[in-house]
Image 1 (cartoon, helix red, strand yellow):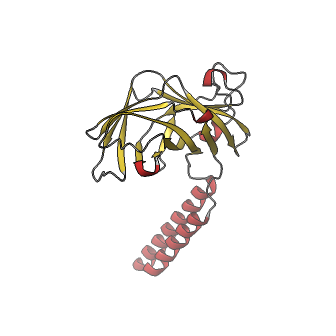
Image 2 (cartoon, one colour; image 1 turned 90 degrees about the vertical axis):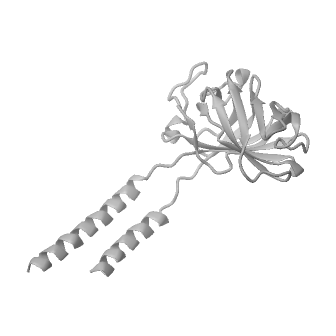
Image 3 (tube, helix red, strand yellow; image 1 turned 90 degrees about the horizontal axis):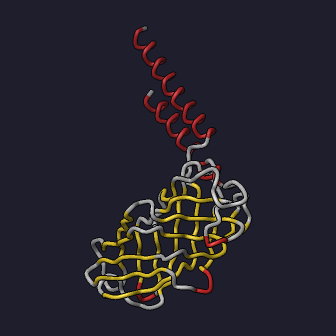
Length: 238
């Protein structure tokens, strides 16, 4: 009987794993003209502060129904700081990011780009979770492990001609990854002073929820397990 139960559970798990994942993302191109709009100020002791300025922007495309347009990321006051984690060295370092307040970064994506804040396709509050820097290659990655860090996505947006048409695809939030290009090989972990960077590439993916077919399959598996349990119970009473 245990073998039968395990077989049902295995088939259910296999079915869930074999279902296609949700496909589609917004692909971010290099920020305009290589403008180094990200200013890191390192303190030489494993920490830094980051200022994005008015906004940083570039072109973007998507396969979610928008097509193509412009993205921008704007900071509205507050502070953004990084603190080195264990294992940092002159070759690579991962920093945990803290935003105060947590809502001081906004991501925009739209067809036009008035003042960098066109949200005709999508808008949301962006949280930078971590930064991994490789100074020798002048590279860095925000949120290397994708997490749900684009939240509070409105279904209608102000200051644009239409509604945020892609908001429905981001019902569970978004997963954002940004690859940076630093203008020097300065190490934020051990050097003090200013380091400039710009976005070289990036992606914004919808956070996934279990699909209805997935839930139905899981439910049928649980029903099967319950049926086996009742069958075993009736046989034990016989």
